[in-house]
Image 1 (tube, rainbow over the protein chains, first blue to last red):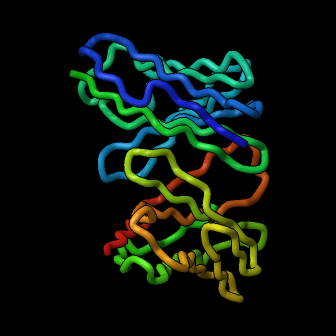
Image 2: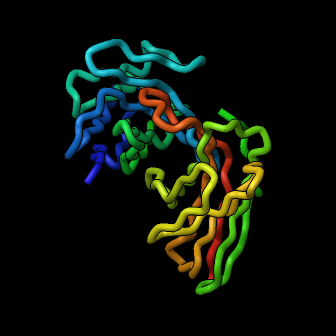
Image 3: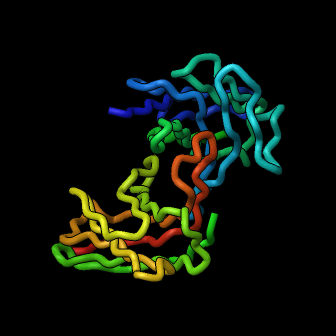
Length: 113
Length: 112
């Protein structure tokens, strides 16, 4: 139980295009989900907290107009990287708050060329 | 949340016990010690957590010192698949709606 599905697992896109990453809780409802970014050989860095039915809360230094988060249902949060640039290439990971713990998605490797 | 300190890397031979230390000298009375691990290019995986008593599950054992200022995660019989980054996180339990904050962790390399 407590599975979080993240798609796609990897994506390559051209500079200037947008990419949407989905995070679904398969067997539980998640009022709150979190998005992290991880650069090579570094730790996970929290980008934003996504709350169902309300605006996301972004960490300092994360551009909310560039990283659009939508949490329209209790089982789905999406992260859209808009106007992607090579420096946005990274490993993006979502996490769902189960109330008694956290479950992480398997991550999305984004490469912007 | 209290700060934690972990060694950046450790090596372990396959089949031997891996003992990963974590210092959390500023831990407060209501903060738990959590351990997660991240295998390369995957999302983090929960391992175990505890408050003050030693804990054991099918994955590992957690030994917390009596003063709670440090702890050790023990993988009793390490395998190659245990090669990963291990994160020790200290936080109050039940903080629904607040994210886990990851430090740099310990990179454990298990070799045959």
